[in-house]
Image (cartoon, rainbow, N blue to C red):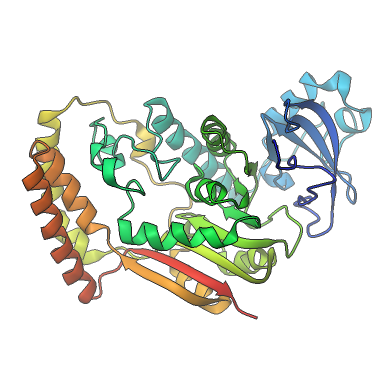
Length: 403
């Protein structure tokens, strides 16, 4: 990875066995490396419990036994059998090539289903050429319209630094990453990798992890295609983060924590990964914005009919219409947990209402500048009014770890 150490090496020994962390250092059985030294295919074994894990396509699959993708693991063992020791492919822990594994529990099956749902979700955006969900700097097809069956390039973003993020929120979140250049950071539940990728571009050595292998595979592919090598992606679970303790100066998360079951017990494990005085940069939707929902309920259907009459329509994939298995299971815990563990440096309440009304005006009325400007102005007034009335939805937060 150029000047950046490989994912697992003597120069970069940050990973741990998820079953044994914070102990359980991992040894490498390299099977394939890129010209720059990045591990593309390898087996990892825990020095404590002896479990093996795979690195495939440059992604370490470091989840506990109940979340392992057994068929993919078996395919890996079969493909590399001649290059792996018998202690892995025949008698490996938790299973060898011909061993059976017990079925996952109902709770684990929900986590697996959650990962697969978001993998399919992200793949849909990738396949239509939309990179806005992977990269805050990249224009794409506006997600709200794709869900409504319209595939129209979001040309409003020409003069916007942060894609679909309102400028004031983007400046707070992303300019705040500059101070961590040269340090280690972790992106929890990274999904398509937006926040971790932006931090890496600002010089932070990032590790992004998510329970969905396909999501991190797509995120890594996008990062490498854009030339960014200062971020590695792993398949891992927030409840069992596979890292050494006390090593990260920055923890980021975008719309991820509300998906984590039992966040109140999981969050302290994430805190253990941080060095003293570390910072967090979080963006979440923590409330349902009831007033905004009532205001927009009659507006969206009429606007979408207008948009669909002007632009080519597409079939709406089923994955874009369903909630995930663990949607909003911990949304109510995010604010109190952040307040408990971090001193607030800066925060914003945001409905993103002005941006939504702007985009409705822009596309429903033919991309006329004066209509778009009028929509933006009305949106600002409406958003400030609803915020004053106590309506809440998006919460952006920068905080410093409490002593």
